[in-house]
Image (cartoon, rainbow, N blue to C red; front, top):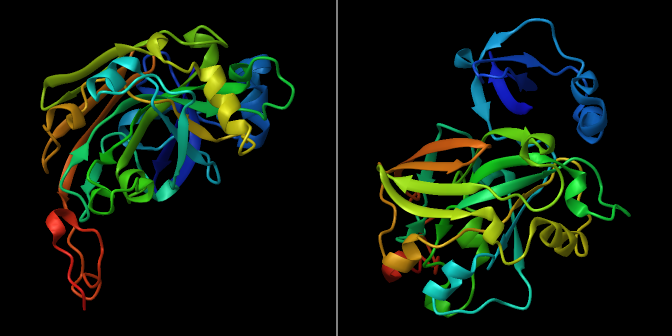
Length: 298
């Protein structure tokens, strides 16, 4: 099944798409009811509206349940690490992404004011359906997967010689996700998915790999997070990106660039980089960590 969060005439709701992804039916059941039971009950858990709605009249929203949390993990593809002169780490690292960072399929990415090195990262994103609790296999608790593009400010923290994940990963309207969630049963069920993923910029392929090449498989990533922050229904986990990013080549994103991120069996996520955000003069005061040392102390 493909499940999307859409907006029609100002109303946002979850919906089930048809087999061709051209029309949908609204889900009337509450997310807290249908998400944990979908795997066992199928469509019966959704309490679907009878009427079909053309997808063309809908706005695709990030497929995040309101109140859901977004986490990211890194250091998860060896080819990427090797190109940066690193080895496989003892464990992954994690961070959180605020909801305000998300943009949906087809929406513009905001070019932040605080970076000159904006990068792309295609990632498989896991969506949690129920608490992990004592489930032997963590991935059995997933609703399914979607496509993410973990846009990053690579020069964040460079001036102070420290990792600045807030700037690098959490900036407003910089994290595309979507276009929908494909349920676990369509992607081989629990366990490690082995899906081809790729990303292109302006038609030029930059990234290509398979999710089976993760250093830390999905089950391990979920356990890592749940050991620190108990995962809840609706939470999302970006599972890391592979080689080919601009950090390796210096070919960073520019306003107007068109990005196409695809994952086999999941979907295609297309976005454009918008214009650079301009700070109001009243806010451009102090040591803000702006690119090229442009800080002004007022």
